[in-house]
Length: 378
Image (cartoon, rainbow, N blue to C red; front, side, top):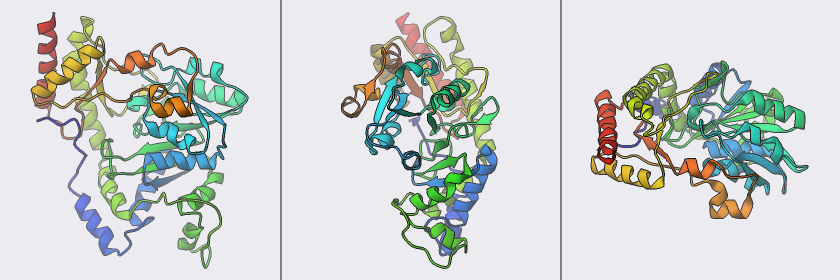
């Protein structure tokens, strides 16, 4: 069986976890947490990076820092994971969904302005598959309408737009280190902070509303409860697991890109015949090979292909029932404009196995099964 995903493992994870245990500080902000934070800051150029317990919690932190209030409206795509909306629904805000672009599956930047009302406070672009949204256009709209931007870059680590790291354009960027991501700590994430003036408040919110971070740095002689907050700080053992992969981030990234390119080359003949579509990477974007997907004719063809792949020992999946059609989406949000592409394209998309360690001959076998499937249908 070729799994859809296998969490990355470099071999040093258990060694570093043991090191964290021996240091007798396995709660948050230990040596490995700090190493990961510094690595993220250096790699992305952000002012401050803070590991969190998930990308969900990083986005919740960002919503708190932006003081999102009940009935505020936040513009985002409907084609995304539920956490993108949950962070703002928890604050009583209304997700306003707009259509996506069919080429990248990202928020259509040309649909944003029409969705802005007097209640709009921010925009949440989602960098699907580690391919950037059109951030120049989005940031221009945000500036002209005095809106904040929080980037959902859950899939975007190591990706750039015009040479700049994803997650560093808006006020905040949010990464995921879930086991399905390019680098993992099991469950985890990170908040990227562009403006240093938010750092102290972010640390307080992340530490249950206390100023304990300042205490650990020796800036104060005791810590106390100074604001509301929650527990968004991951264990240093989780950070130790992640650190083993960040040390090899470039190597892992290059291998994933090689797998992605092998898929693209192998399936190019089907694309040229108009049988299926492959991912689009705009010229200003450098992606991280987070996923490789294909688009088939319709949901019926996708269902049949998934069954065929499964029968041949290959796990392939689809994802994201558009949020505006989900029960909670209908309850808490609304779709602005016409759903031209969101539902249609979501029903055509199929994700193929993609992970560090996927062998070239496995990629070739997956492509062979897909080609045979379409040959029988021609």
